Length: 99
Image (cartoon, rainbow, N blue to C red; front, side, top):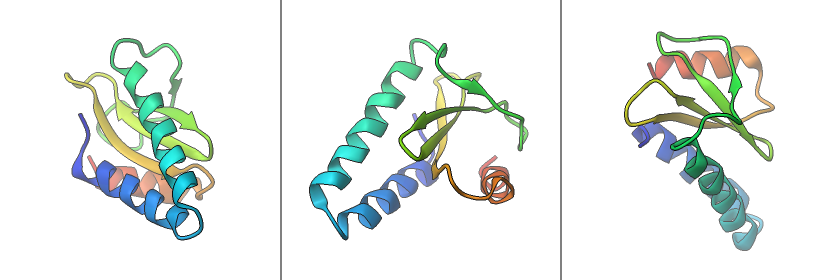
């Protein structure tokens, strides 16, 4: 399960990459979806992160992106898919907005 904002993140990622290479854009989204799928039955591979909002969040890296999700939500909730090279303060601000 994911928030509408997470779907918007995926659209933005695809559009940005697709401007140069449609096949690469499709490949990156495929990798992100493949990284999200195993999170539902097992959370072993995730990194615990400081809590920038009221939810306990974990992050799963995929290429240069971070999948932010709330593992305690049932069903699991994907909060955001963001570029991992953003300033950590900007990342925290975005995640706080998506409580």
